[in-house]
Image 1 (tube, one colour):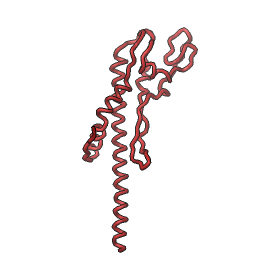
Image 2 (cartoon, rainbow, N blue to C red; image 1 turned 135 degrees about the vertical axis):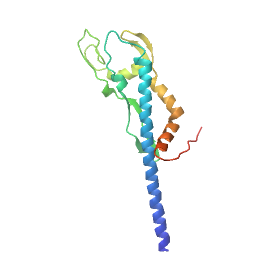
Image 3 (cartoon, rainbow, N blue to C red; image 1 turned 60 degrees about the horizontal axis):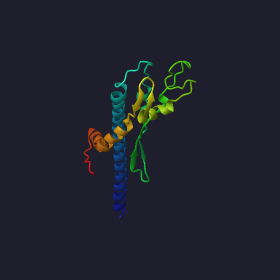
Image 4 (cartoon, one colour; image 1 turned 180 degrees about the vertical axis):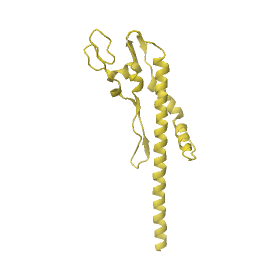
Length: 172
């Protein structure tokens, strides 16, 4: 009888260790795939915003491009069965610069107040821009979401393969 309990305890311990190992691998794979998503986002912004227009009235800071970010990849869910990572524009990386009321102040109003929190929304949704006139919204986040809906499971699968794990993607 004691022998069965020992086997049972070992099996539970092994299952727990296996679960932790798989969760850790999945967390790393999602984190790496999310880094690829940020790279896709920044490439999209570069190709469809920065390369489309060369400013004449101001010097580019590239703050918007560099604001593309991701959260830390975490385990969540009631049973710890979800891996979560989100993409966003970190407006703390968009630095307002004030040169005076007669100048175009990057990411600042004429009185020097920061408008950094609005920059991603203005670029994503479109509007009137210095020297460019009316501009359609860039839609970089929407394009990234569409790419992820199509490719994210395969991206995670490829990351798991790099770790030596064979995983089959199923679904839709």
